[in-house]
Structure formats: structure tokens, C-alpha cells
Amino acid sequence: MTLRIVEIFGPTIQGEGALIGEPTVFVRAGGCDYRCSWCDSMHAVDTSYRHTWEKMSTEAVWSEVEKLSNGAPITVSISGGNPAIQNFGPLITQGKSHGYRFACETQGSIASPWFKDLDTLVLSPKPPSSGQTTDWAKFESCLEAAQDQPDLALKIVIFDDTDYAWAQDVAQRYPQMPLYLQPGNPESDPETPVPLQASIDRLNWLVEKTVADSWFRPRVLPQLHVLLWGNQRGV
Ligand SMILES: C[S@@+](CC[C@H](N)C(=O)[O-])C[C@H]1O[C@@H](n2cnc3c(N)ncnc32)[C@H](O)[C@@H]1O
Ligand SMILES: Nc1nc2[nH]cc(C(=O)O)c2c(=O)[nH]1
Ligand code: SF4
Ligand SMILES: [Mg+2]
Image (cartoon, rainbow, N blue to C red; front, side):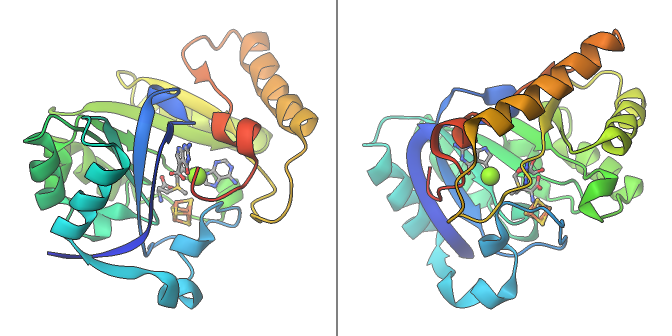
């Protein structure tokens, strides 16, 4: 199996959502069917970066994960881009046989048969500010592909009041799924520092909004890695 890989990095901490704080090695897949206006990982999306992506065998990816984690079983997060475009099934099988855990981050536009082999599937449908439109039939197919096997989490990025109202609608569609909200980071250029106070202010805005609405279902979280390292890549 050949995979298009942008970067493999870590161990670091998972900075977002359900597994926040968890020691994690990231495998970032190249290519995405979306073009979110505010994507913080355009180097894994825009085909002008394709020459920086590496074609790697499953074995080569696995060996890098093992090297980075020093052979100690850890959580591996498969992100991108949209990793669902490619076949990460063999990597997951290999890693699980050594006691590793696997999570995947995807927008929910493409269902992959290997979703059922994950420990955690994070579905992150995109709000209006992204400029993308969710195909809910495809999103449902992702849930079906998971076959009730992995833990599921819904993670929604909020930039403004419109996104917030949209998130409330989506939440109602999926009353059983654990829900995470994170404020959007308008600064996605890796060279530009992210002022800490501005990040805190955006988080505070979102926390105060949910509390004022007595909307107690979501967990509101920052992007912890952005607070620590800004937009630096590979962390
Ligand atoms: C880069 S995406 C890759 C995985 C997949 N394509 C997705 O969007 O879920 C990983 C996570 O980062 C979030 N994200 C991307 N750009 C962001 C930004 N500027 N601010 C906050 N979160 C962002 C996405 O919504 C997603 O939850
Ligand atoms: N530390 C850290 N946490 C993350 N959570 C989601 C990430 C991603 O880009 O998918 C990410 C990332 O790139 N780094
Ligand atoms: S779906 Fe994810 S990787 Fe693709 S453009 Fe949007 S945020 Fe970026
Ligand atoms: Mg990121």
C-alpha cells in the first residue's frame, strides 16, 4: 500500500477535542476534497505543495511511527488533508497488533471501510465560514462505516454567530454524539505568530456565549497546540 504523506511528527500532545492532552504521534495525509477558507493545514491540501508530499509504503510509515514513539505504544492520530481518501487500513492493523491506538480526523465527506478499525473517529463538519457545504448523506455514510466500533466525537470550529447557530443545528441532528467546540484561528500562516491574548479572547467569547445560552452540552476547548506553539508545523 502506497500512501501520500505530508509529515509524520511527535510525540506531542493532541491539541484539540476529545483526546486533548493525550500523547500522540501525528500522520498527516496529503490531499483534500475540501478547500476551507481558513484551513490551517493548506500544505496538506493545496496541490501546489504536492512536490513536498512523500509517497511512502505502509511499512515505511509504520517504521517512522515506531521510531518516533521509541517503540512504546502511543495514540496515533491520522489527519490531513482528508485521510479518508487513502487506505490507512493496513497501517492501523499493523499498529494495533503492537498495542498502538488510532484516531482519525476527517470532515465526514468520504466514508472509508477502515473507520471501523479506529479507536476514535473525530468528525468535524465545516460551518458556513469555511465556504464548504456538508453533504449530510455522505456524513451519515461515515457513521455507518464506523459500525459502532470507534468512539465518535463531533468537533465544530466556530468563527462567528452564524457558525454558532449552525453548530446548534448540527448538534440537534446528532443528540448522542459527544460534542466539542473550538474557536477558529483566523491566522493560519505558519510564519505569523498567533498573539496569545487574541486566542484567549476568542475562547472566552465562545465560552461566554454557550454559558449565556444555557447550552451545556458542548465542551468548549482551545487549540492547545496553538496556545503553546502558535502555527508552527510539526507540533
Ligand atoms: C486540518 S483539519 C484535517 C482533518 C480534516 N480535513 C478535517 O478538517 O477535519 C484538522 C482539524 O483542524 C481544524 N481546523 C482547521 N483550520 C482551523 C482554524 N483555522 N482554526 C481552528 N480549527 C481549524 C479542522 O476543522 C479540523 O477539525
Ligand atoms: N498538537 C496538535 N494537535 C492537533 N490536533 C489536530 C491537529 C491537526 O492538524 O489535525 C493537530 C496538530 O497538528 N497538532
Ligand atoms: S477539510 Fe480539513 S484539511 Fe481540508 S481544507 Fe478543510 S480544514 Fe483543511
Ligand atoms: Mg491542525
